[in-house]
Length: 415
Image 1 (tube, rainbow, N blue to C red):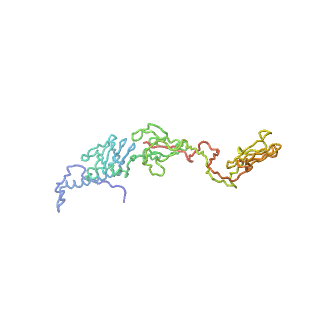
Image 2 (image 1 turned 60 degrees about the vertical axis):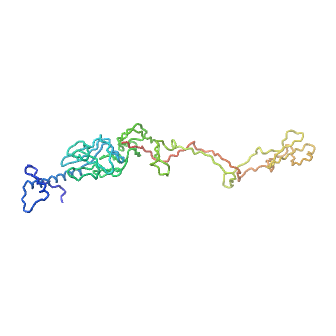
Image 3 (image 1 turned 120 degrees about the vertical axis):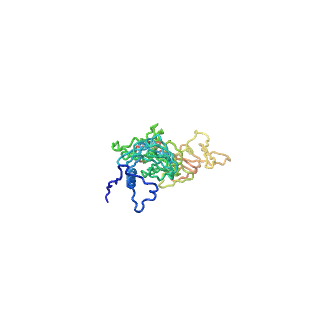
């Protein structure tokens, strides 16, 4: 079968006097047996068939060729269709091309659930006029419940938009826009930038490869997240851009709570300035904590301290001197110097004493308990009370907690 279209059959397109319309009754009954109708009736029948062939073919062209286009983004919030430039419908009828527009001044158009925007596209270029559906004709459009659209083929209605729930259907494009969607109609995205596929406010990372001229973005739709103020967005509202310099992207809400969409908006950044945190700290050890000997690093040495004294030293060379020290339980013990020439007598006093000869022999070291000199080295000890050790460290006041990453320039879609 050839895919080439055959020549359109044509009949009775000349002198209209050769055409006569049969009566309504005749159209109801049709031909009778052996009837010889007037030739004008036969011409009427073939001309009507020709007109319908033409209509089907021409409006088939419309549905095949028609495309809607917008120079600026369109906003759909689930009920209102808002646009910031004309909505254009381009189409072909026969061998001619036309453009019909829904003008900007008609924005926004509100649709109830189940309603549609229908138009009768004229064989001319110009703006479509909004009218009540009962008055619609070529060059008009209307909002109407889909259940009320008639089957009158003479009207040649084209459904441009149709609401289902909170979604917007576009039959000519075989597309659906969901609630709170920003989109373009028939947009060709330069440099494969898909501006129309993401909503206004979307932020994406862009890697420029050190100024590679071939890697660019559409500045009519995207701006750097550099904190610029008073930027007019595609919906006509003025906003400030966030400053993403040196910062990572983080979701709204509390970690693990699933509340990213319900937590209150805030422009304040999260985390510490310059990704710094102070990790200096002290270590504490509980009482009665034993540090074992062996490969532990708790070895230490005791030197002479204030609880020690030594023999061989008195205030002077005459008289009896008595020096006290205390046992571990607090009992005082005197130490008595034996004077030259005799024994000292303390009468009935019950004391423990130690005789010593001044300045003779090695000095003797005593502790409070009187048990003798302290040990030089200890390798195992237990703390009976909590103590804190503060260790010197080589850390700076703050440390960076920034994860390892690649730097990008963040862009936000604003139109």
